[in-house]
Length: 245
Image (cartoon, rainbow, N blue to C red; front, side, top):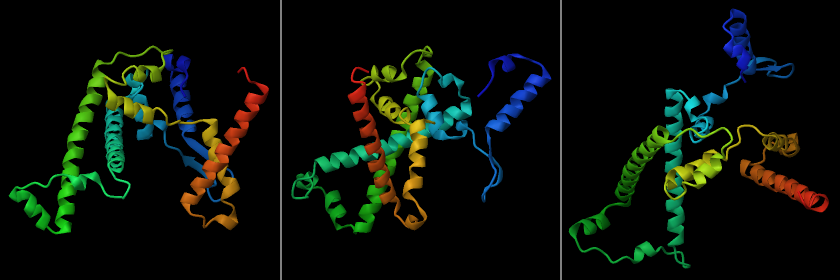
């Protein structure tokens, strides 16, 4: 947090107050327990997820420095690779028959010598070739998405403060499908929210001393069930007493 009046002031006192405010905002004090003392906390701008979300918001993306923009673009390029992998897996699942055999195996076999040599290759070499093709596809995809991100930053006009960034990207769903997909992911990540704090607090009811050996997947399942139940009860209460809201 910054104070606009202090920023405009040029007095040494105002500069000192701003410095101390920044230090205090990045410190946590623990009065008891094993973490007793003062601990330095990272700034939100130290997290690539936050920088990526700010980069995809045209109303604030000019606030980022050059280094922060590069971190954001690198994070978005990595995220896009994961999205493409997930899409390829989903497409592969769609082409699988009910018997569990893939339609890709039903293609007409090639008659050239290269295909016969591939069939004679050991499975280990086939796996290496497939990984190399994935590497080439990932490299081409990364260069492409980085170019589109740079063009977006250069040619997009800054949005007004009251503009809806979700509507901005929804209008570009067809013209910029890759950037739209990225915005749907990074803009959905809450930096801080009461619901997030409540989710962490819910762990106190699950990870009691007698359950410390519980698997992480089981903890996640319990959290989903617990929080969905709470949200369902709140929605039921709202519909019962405030149906018009």
